[in-house]
Image 1 (tube, rainbow, N blue to C red):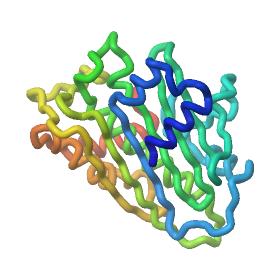
Image 2 (image 1 turned 90 degrees about the vertical axis):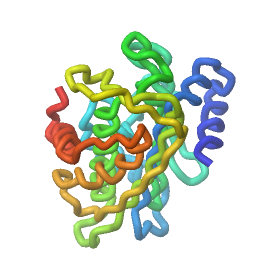
Image 3 (image 1 turned 30 degrees about the vertical axis):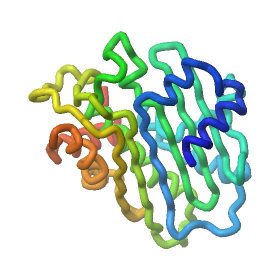
Amino acid sequence: MSEKRLLKALNRIGLGDDADVRRMASSLTWEVALAIEPEWEGRVPDKHFLGKVLGSNPNYTGWPVWLDSRSFTEAKSQPVIHDGAWEAIIVSKGGWSSHLEFMRFDPRGKFYLRRALQDDQVPEKVAPGTALDPIIVIIRVAEAIAVGIAIANGLMTTDDPPRQLGFAFRWTGLANRTLKTWANPFILMIGEPRAHDNTISTYVELPSDTPVSAIAPAVQKATRDLFALFDGEIIPAHVIEDWSNRLIERRLR
């Protein structure tokens, strides 16, 4: 379903046959699906809902998950309503890094993000198709969970009891890559653990009142099977906690 929605969105903005865009669409991909339970009945995808969602994003990074593209100068990147939910697709083939990003905001409490990961989009730093940076993985998963918590709380009233948040993650295009800290070369890894399967999915749940300072165990659970795919690699819990805290405390640089 996500692949079909992406292709439909690309065709809608006239980029379905663009070779560079199709290359990005088939490169290393990360997907996040967030379901908030119980879902909201009768909520509509109006501007108030979209403003609540996008206005809740803490913007921990310069290119945050579920980013706000309403003010983008390129009209094709701005959110529009399709099939009862807001959708936005962002395509950039220039600058310091290429981007292909598809987002969906369903007022019932279901959110989706599909992103072409930067491991394949900065050839001057790392050869496409060869690597996955584990530190970037930790940061992005932590960001998705922290932003998901913020969105859920932004949609709730002060009288609402905590809701349950389910995060499903999927990575595609992993086969024959090695774990390599190419974006963080000061961090050394022993050996070059390699993946032999192409795709892996993980899932974590936590309540909406979880402090963002306490998300590291969920980040570890969400990434454990992914890292194990690389010749059984284990990223220590203290490393995951450190980088999750750096994100939340805005100490990435």
